[in-house]
Image 1 (cartoon, helix red, strand yellow):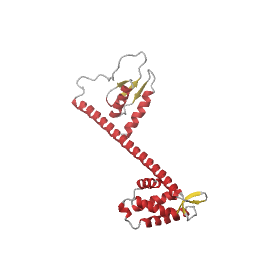
Image 2: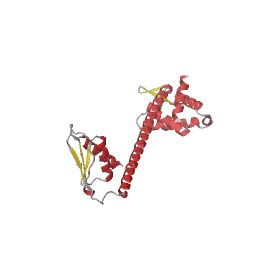
Image 3: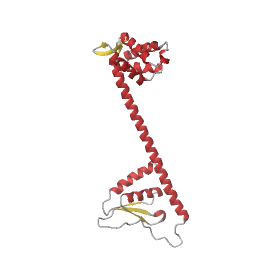
Image 4: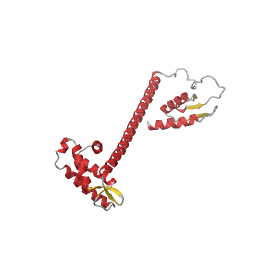
Length: 240
């Protein structure tokens, strides 16, 4: 399907570039499907397609009419000797070729639709990621009260404690009963503080915005909570 689509695109460029009176001849090596594609393009572009010769050696010439040329010239072939006219088998073969071309077009349309669907999913994912980052930033500046080198940081005390209390109150009831709720947040905070230090921010007082995002994602994932919904609930709670 891809090769036929490439051929169609190449043939279209050649035919659209024809000036009045100019022609382009496709050699006898074209497949039957490729010949059909050329003839369809010629009809679409209002060009004249003519078959020169017959059998496997037949050439397909496409030309653009001169401005003063009128009438529609149909594709012509050399006269077929009496007794050698196309029989039912040739008609069946032509019908099969048309059916195959239609099937290939359906496959290409399905492939294009699948590509469009995947693109839409990727765009939605990117939008959701941007939304999550925005929520994280807002939440950070709502809870973070510390400072390090002129930069706001999320402190172990009292920010983590307040965040843990609010997160637990906003979580579903089944998660609120989990006795290790605060413990998970505290252990994740310690892990993230260490990672932050290893990556160059040498403070154990609290987390910068970047590492706060890591902390929240890891914590809520460990607790099995939906990140976006809980972030929105926390923001709403803090506004109240």
